[in-house]
Image: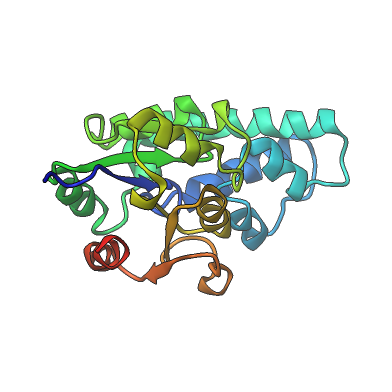
Length: 223
């Protein structure tokens, strides 16, 4: 009897890549362009994972929608400019990330995907910069879904791959990722090297501190 298909979904920023420098820099640029006080670094990192409109609504709640929209567009422009200038260096892979992806990719019954608050353009550019084009069979981005923690990204990834909820795992560094996993009825693996404190990952099925711990965590969930 063949093993059932498994689906492993990765968040991107704070999970696969360390993009905090680029995020903080782009956020600083877009607030300064509107002559607004720049949010504290901790505040900026706290919204990583949300779609940009939701993120700006949290960072600038006192400002009208049209100004929040200008902040969103300014952020996109600044982030895109950094990516063109720095390439892969603007969002380096975390230690062990590529090894973990490659190891899972060799398992016939395991499918890989991403569920990210990035735009389609941003995700495609990052995947190309790191040479990851052939690993992910499903790519869910903010352009096509409600913001995390709404379960739409996971539900759609499962629909595209025909994998049952019991055989699906979401891996991420934020409370939004873990709450999304819970809302979708799938297991969530929280990681401690990202942008949210371990204490807020209370919806996680389990928490890991290095990519080396991922195989054991997956085995504990599925076996």
